[in-house]
Length: 316
Image: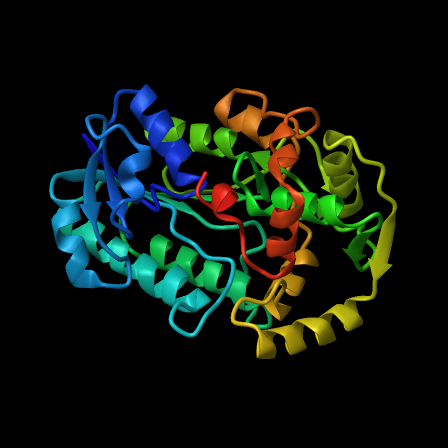
């Protein structure tokens, strides 16, 4: 059985590929940028190059494919790759190729909070992608994780950059909004397990980690892991909207966008114990398992502040 993984070289993708190989699956990786596949043993996986927005480039990747794990997503919308370009058009292209190939399973990663609400372009595009999956006719499972953490993540490493740079950490708004941090390896494990679970076909699963945490608690945990004591300074949301609009107009990659500000306000939690109930294992706690944030230095923090993720973090 050939399992095709889109976004295979990304933050989540490389963990999914590892989990599939551990289960002796035959894995084919759809790679957008030649050379990125070098993170894998060339004898362990098959590689096909393609772009999910280019239908013609997908034809060679889907022969003999039985299952598709679709992971491609973005958190910054650009002119050439908007949220709908990637999350709807790209997903529709992959679905069409999977259907033509006769795939029997389509696993799709969305996000908690995806909804038919055009005021939030990111979550609306995720909802549109989900609808395309549900209406495709291909047996599916949709995963809606909360914020993911692990070596190479942008969320905790960005916070680590702030902790490294400033004696007082700026927090947008009250910082009381709730998250349910899920280890990226745990989501990869759930995805791999699902391939062997007929009962999960047609399911949409909201998944969170070991503990619900406020943004303030996440910041405190990052500072603790770095051995720093950092008080917080709360910045009014209205002021951040002004700053985001100005920076988006002046910088090609603003440190924060108005769309991302909307994401920060979404309560991103799942039912407690959902991973244990559905998949039979206890997810990893964030506390005590984020030593990777110590790799963020002062120079990295400056790059993050300017809106550019350092290469040694981005490519892990």
